[in-house]
Image 1 (cartoon, rainbow, N blue to C red):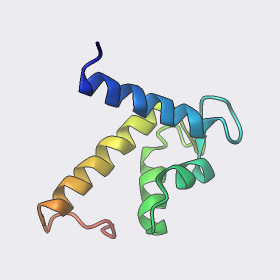
Image 2: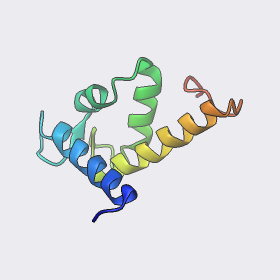
Image 3: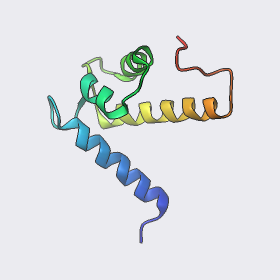
Length: 92
């Protein structure tokens, strides 16, 4: 039986693959796929996340780069929930 944490990680991998096959390379997530996946209402925040995390600047996210975004988005959401004024999605 899988633990809840392992099931959550499997879901993350499955979601990445579901969106990374829409356009371009099979196991890379381009910006259009990324926007569709997150469906975020703040395009400046999305662009900033994508550009900062595209480590090799190929305009696509590998799974490794995608996990960095997940960590950043999770951290931002956690701060917002706790009303931490150090974090707003519109911040530079």
